[in-house]
Image (cartoon, rainbow, N blue to C red; front, side, top):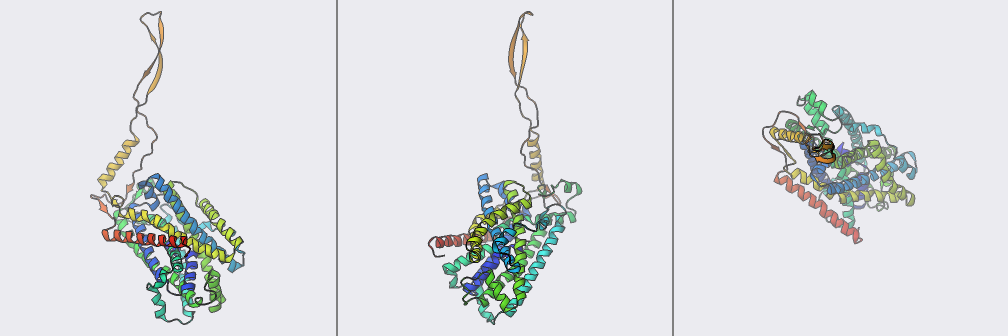
Length: 505
C-alpha cells in the first residue's frame, strides 16, 4: 500500500520531463530519492511498530498544541498537493482513453470508487481486507512493471553503459533547471503523507500477530476499541517480528519494483524524446504519443490505463493518510468519503482554473509544480519523525511494574475526591421562644463526588509482562544518518527557493 505513493501521476510526469530534458543524467536522483524514501519509511515503520501509534498521534501527545496545529496544516497542504497530481493524472488518462475534455475529466474525479476505502476499516478483522487490497495493488504494480519491461526492450538501441552512467552524479545536477526537476522527483518519490501511512498501517499487522500467537486474550480483545487500537500496545515478540518482516518487505518493493518503474519511465522518455522538438514541452501526452508510435497503439493505451488506475489507487491512499492526520493531530474523526470530497474539491479548484485558462500545457506545469511543493514541505514533516525515533522515552517500552503504576495513577485521578462548598439557609432560634431571628449561614461540607475529567487511558500491553525496559531508539549511526538526510533535504530546498526567487528556476 505504501508503494502506491511512489508510482502515482506525479512520478510519471516528473520522470517524463526529466528524461526528455536531461536524457539519463537524473537517474542518480531517482536512485538517491529511492534510498532516502526507504530509509525514512523504515523509520516510520519502526515508530509505529514500537509505540503502537502513528506519527500524528505521537505528535499530539508530545508537542504543544500550537505546533501540532502547524504540523497539521502542513500535512494537509501536502495531501492537497498530492491530490492535485491525482486529479490531473486521472483527467489526462480519461481525456486520452475516452476523449473526455480536460475540464470535464477534472470534474469527474470527484466521483471516486470509494469501496476501496473498506481496506482502511480498522478492527480485529481488518487484516484480511487490507491483505486483499495489497494483492490488488501488487497486480497493478506487476502489470506496470511488465509494460515497462516490454517498452524497454523496444526502445531505440542505446549503449547500456551510457544508461547506467546516469546513476552516477554529474555536473548537470548543479544546473538550476536540473535542480528544479530533481526537487520534483524528490517530492514525487519521498511523499510526506506516506510517512503517516507507514507508521499507521503496521497496527493491524501487529494485532493480527498477537491474536494468532495467543498474546491477546478474548477479554482484552473486546477492550480494544474497534477502529483506533487506543487500548492496545503490541508485545515485544510482535514488535520484533513486524519490524523485521515489514522492513524487508518495504525495502524490497521500493528498491525493485518502484525504483524500476520510475527509472524505466525516465529511460523510455530519454531514449525516445530527448533531443527532439518535443523535449522542451514533454508531458504525459507526449509519452503516450511516443509509445503508441514506437510500440503500438495498445502500448500507449496500457500506459494510460496504468496511469488511471494508479491515480485512483494513490488518491484512496491519500484519503487514508488524511484520515490518519486529522484523527492524530486534532482527534477529529470524519467519514472517509466526506474527507475525500473535501480534499478533492480543494484540489480541483486550481486544476479547473488552469485547465480552462491554458489547457494541456498548464496542467502539466501545475502537476510538476505540485511535486516541487511537496519537496519543500518535506523537511517540516520529516523532522518530527527523526526526533521521535531518536527520543528514548518515546521508543522505550517500560517494564510491567511501571505500566501497572501508570494504570493505578490514572485510576486515582479518575476517582479523586473533591471539596464542594455547600450553601444552606435555616432559621436559628434565640434564647427566648417568642423571638426568632432569621440567620443565613454558609457551611463548608466535604462531599466525595465523581467529576468528569480528561484522563489518559491506560494501554493494555499484549504478551508476557516485561521485567525490564526495552529500548528501540536510534543508535548513534542511525541518528546521525537521519539528521544528515534531513539536512540534505532542507539545504536542497533552501537552494531551490533561492533559485526561484532569483528567477533561475
